[in-house]
Amino acid sequence: MPIGKLLGSKTTRSLTVVSVLAEAKRAFNGGNRTRAILLLGVAVLAWKWAVIGLAAQGVIKLVRGGGSAGSSPA
Image: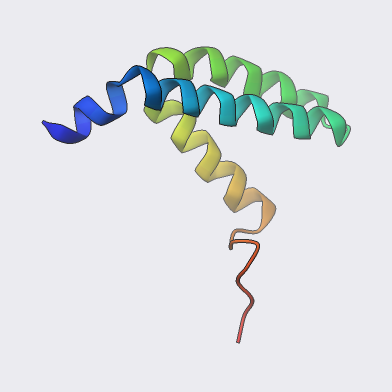
C-alpha cells in the first residue's frame, strides 16, 4: 500500500517529529508547559507511528482556531 510506505518512511517520520518538537517549543515559549510536555511525549511516539504526530498537529490546529495564516473569512 503506497500510503503505508509513505507514512512509514524515515523521512516522513523525521519531518513529523521535527514539526511536533517545534510545536512543543512554541507551547513552552508561550508558557503552556503542560502542552509542551505532552507534545514531547507525542514526538517520541511519532518516531514509531507518524500518524500519531500528524493527528496531534491536526488537533492543535483545531484548538488554535483552525484556518491557515493566509486565509481569511469572506
